[in-house]
Length: 193
Image (cartoon, rainbow, N blue to C red; front, side, top):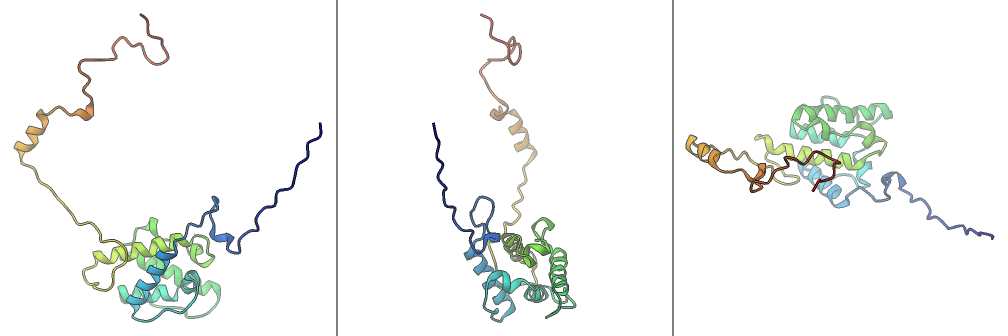
């Protein structure tokens, strides 16, 4: 018996393969990226340069201007041009400033995520987080990004209400009408009849 295997053509790698995850699906959301750019433009009060999302943000200049607009004086020195190392310092200064502003550390992207385009969705998440945190700053009254943050909804109960609850049967603990597992014998044992 002879088995003949045919070569199956494989699709060519897309030009932006670095933007795809292992599953082959793009993790980027173009609508969110567009919303982030529109928000940045509205906060800065000036149009952003044309180009791809990651290219507009790559050198960190716009990001530094953004945080300086939200919290004046956050980034003292912005490198408009220079070596890759100097431009990456802009991103690092932005990251330090937004951490101080209140963005949770786990939502802040790594420098390489943006500069080397390793994880652009994390950059978008970080900027959404920054937009969300602006709502906690009463001095900021500019445009909003993302959903409105929940407000504190504290409830207080009287001692009588708390005691009344203790008398109730908590069904989450289980109510099985007198059935029990006594005599079961544990896992793996057969039931003796």
